[in-house]
Image (tube, rainbow, N blue to C red):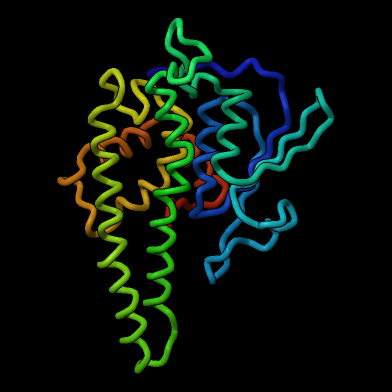
Length: 259
């Protein structure tokens, strides 16, 4: 699909605070999809892998992504955090083409009159961070436990606890969610190649990061979930994604999607 022309929405000064190896790259990619002017400020993680403390000067939580939007029309300065909220705000104002049509013809404003694509989009806007991403966070915590600098006689205990959580909970949950995604892609509306149908949506961009992280697990096999792996590759072949990645390489000299 050809990428649409730049939005004709009123101009605003947009600043993205981007942190390496974080969810912020999705927002940079989205800005490239929308083709709106923006300023990019990049940050690197500390040796502890925590975010740069300077981010707290922008938002009290000190996380990334953070987006500042200054509107000449209203003279307001917005500071937005949380990836889902940022995607919703940007698509509402500059990228309505990334939101599926809400109602079926003749069923406007009726309960149950929504299109399947719109219902999927609404679901995935919450699923990405509410259901799928927490699994990756748990995996990261377990990895840190295994690699923690503890006395050698304690390490078998910490490793045993982490391994039990991995096998008893995490592996089963990842398999459950990947099978769900595989089935969703197999039954995408109108035979589409994206989660919500034939066209990419903001929900696809939001879901890309936790799926990309899960794809690196040793128990998640491409032959078992071919549609999921092909889906991620299709997303990353978009010109807007390539532009976003190249921009980071130019600014930072390197790019790494995940830890």
